[in-house]
Length: 278
Image 1 (cartoon, helix red, strand yellow):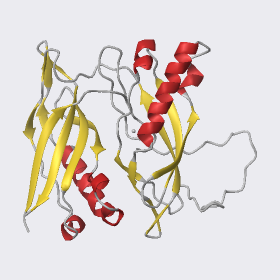
Image 2 (image 1 turned 90 degrees about the horizontal axis):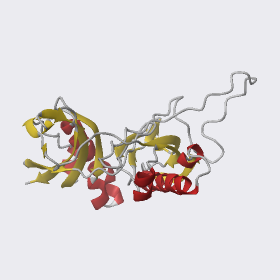
Image 3 (image 1 turned 135 degrees about the vertical axis):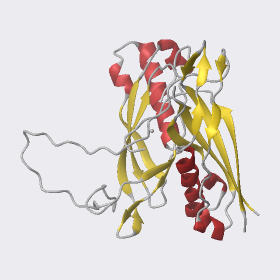
């Protein structure tokens, strides 16, 4: 059985940023926002002055684990960029929304809620407060769509707690147009068609969103459209393996940088990787 990889590029219309704490950025008032940095789990730091407490059970009474102690950390596979609301742009609101979730045994985020709001940092101005809350909501809406490789314990997937930080910041990253010459691909790596995806005859399109820096290197690579969205639950693992293969390949791409006024500039780009079997 022969595999064919087809890819094409689309310049991104920046909307917001999504960094976080294990898995994901940002828009401007007049320019595109910098995308999210992949989110990474955080572990609360006990008060140094407080007396030592006995270790909490792992899992807890509800059967949810914490990473560590033989429990792996979930790995982000799909991380959509949150929308930077118009009201937040106008009010020039930026900041970090802290979100707590449970990543279930299928890699889906559940019990998604804000633990620290951007609105806590803007004072009592009603317009700024409303703008900050709109970013909190945008962060929630994005994180609810995340997809993960689930945490593992003793070779089996388990549900774990995870903290995600979504960072909205104004940046100087460009999109296409406005006198910007788009980047050109000069080195491409074909993704590996996983055995499980071949066996289950999984095909489809993965979209990888990146920022190409001024040296022509892809950065902030993350899945913005997953093949797993188009298959049934029993085929999710195979589809996610193709998403990961696309990510691994795109991270090795090399471009001539985008140019504006004779100088290299960073730019958003979508890379579409099409997995087909013949």
